[in-house]
Length: 280
Image 1 (cartoon, helix red, strand yellow):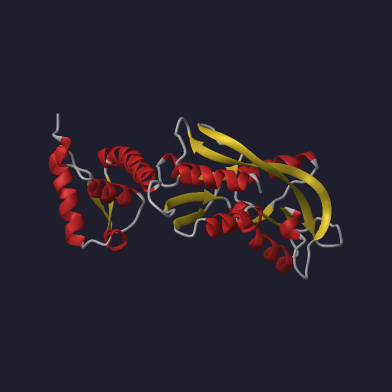
Image 2: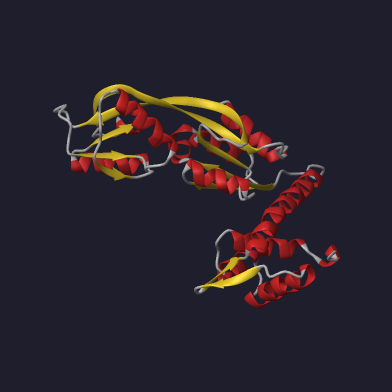
């Protein structure tokens, strides 16, 4: 067996960062090291483990199969290390730490934006990052230990979940009520799009020419500019000086949940954030 005594947390950070798709230059900047130190750290780790971890990929570098496997374990080790430091820090005056949260656009834009602001105001020393992406992409990040929790559209198979709230999505379009030539909808394959497609089929609609966007605010603007129909929550569609015309209420409903890695105990900071948004 390989001697693991020479492996450092910094080397694990290198591997984990490469797994996130960053370039060596970006990783070196983020971790405040030189590219030479980064390369030497990876080389030393490969020697210790007796396996190739990184390979060329065009002008970039990517993890090998062995590197991908190590990155998963590195994520766990780094997360537990942060929890250890956080626990020690609780005995000192002041509140600090790092919290990484993934959210679908609706959650970050208008459902829990006030909760995020409230948490930040109550924890000014916490370094908080919010990544906005699709549910599937966020669940993948969560599985790879890139975030502590993810707020996504249900379902989230393979994860523990906490229900947050549901919202209704309505059909909006030109005031004429005549079905247009084009639609603006969420991307194919997304959780929300699957719900919308089912709802539209039930209502007797078969959209053909479709413009796709995962940002509801952009969908609204495109619908206004092109005279298309769209399916959106009223908080977005009916906001501002130019609200979209309501065509049909209740095309579908979607439920937002907090997804956590199964069996993983949330850190103090994560638990505090969960408590904040569940009370929104």
